Length: 265
Image 1 (spheres, rainbow, N blue to C red):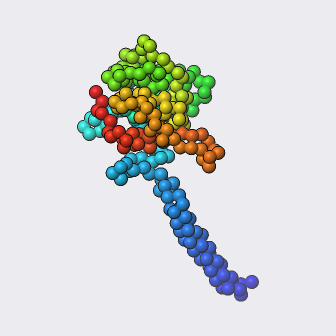
Image 2: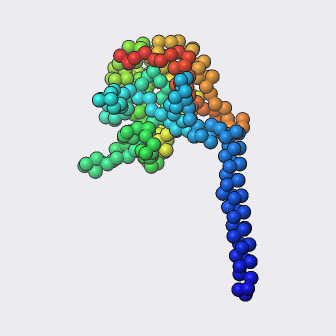
Image 3: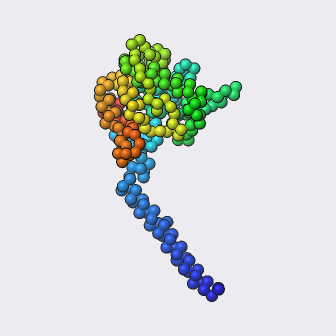
């Protein structure tokens, strides 16, 4: 039995070495080469660069486009109170992505649905875990949809740039103003995604923001509409899923086509 042990051990060592080289070295290198050639963007994290070559994000991770102010060099997101709810203040110069909600319990034990704080950070991914029938979530979505109407999203009538700025900081100032006509807010603009980092919005959600962005930047709605149309991503293999718009890519295209936006008033 043991007379063949050295021979069997040598065979086992050889097989182990061959498998280790094939599976641990050759195969990974081949897959690396194939992925870099055939799927370069995906293999490198889908990183997105601006016109100067600086990495500004990734096409698989959502970004925030809220108003900020600098405090000792640190960007602080601004918040807005609207109908008893707290929302991050939308920056009308940029297309907005999906919101992110979390459930927090107050000191009195009351549950509240609040925006993630801080928003859009990779170590802060969470959802509300609330069912669509939950009263807290329904109220949050309904109120946020109203806030989006107030800042000029999906309004058939248009605000001036100064009105938009006032509406952003004080939504009630021009909310559903006289003569303004509205249509329902696209669902993905008012409902949060579970991961908190959905990078895409529907085509309807992008088009709903055309008037707001055009007014805030002082350009025509037709120009912005054309830019949205040019940045629509089709179905996968022309069959699967729905057409959508990557928010970061669209906002970068805005800056490239029309230059940096004017400063907020």
